[in-house]
Image 1 (cartoon, rainbow, N blue to C red):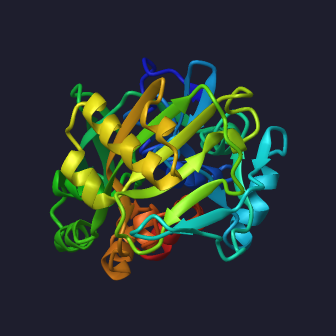
Image 2: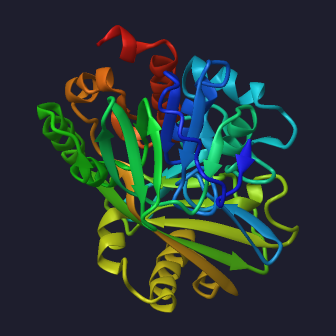
Length: 363
């Protein structure tokens, strides 16, 4: 796996198996993984400095924490078999269960159907890193794609924010969240009626906004749960979890809470200064846990996820209609389920369709 942002992309449009993947999140990494044994040259263009998208890990003051997607469920045979295949070293299965709470803050035991909850001692970003390490994909980080062009010879060229062109490629796979993918499709130069249809289908996917507050405390309490989820969508806190339940994440005697606030709260406080947002969120966390000490974390971190979770799936017909031209999309929003496992399935399936020559078959 290469990672040299200064190296120019090989212009291999004459190769029938040249593929560009936009985004190195779970869907993009799974697509590259599906193409690992294909006769294909794969390039990934990623806007950030890291990989795995909303399945994100940070390090601060000796702690490591997953502040976006908290873990990966082994939902379905695909994920259950994939995760161990990526290597069991550092693999963490969170033992403590997820419990529930309601609008009044009443905490209750969960239903005992959590299944396995995977992460790694080095954080959930290991998912994309391990997938990509098993490929020969060329990854160009800090490369924000701003437009796509259907060039002469039926190939695709992508232009980044610096004005540099990448390609030509025979196939393009767009994996950002639906609103960002829709914007790219609207910025695509392609004289084909199918383009408006697919852009409209992607643009119609509704999303929830979430602001995450990471709250650290120099003490640790014992609870019978790993996470708490609000089941009636009527509390300011949508999700609360304890990173100390993950091996290798938090030093002994410390506690690190991941508070993902409700969409309503998050939209109202999305642009608040960190200090104000922390104070408001920590008050709600302390009330939920019945312990005023949680009102005063000794350090904090935060992240706003404007496009956190899709609430519906895109109409699949327009999405599949453009694949015969080598234009593909993938992501949790394709399946309509805001989970890492859904992004993995969608990306892997798209990679398999590219690998199996759906483009050639549909010409």
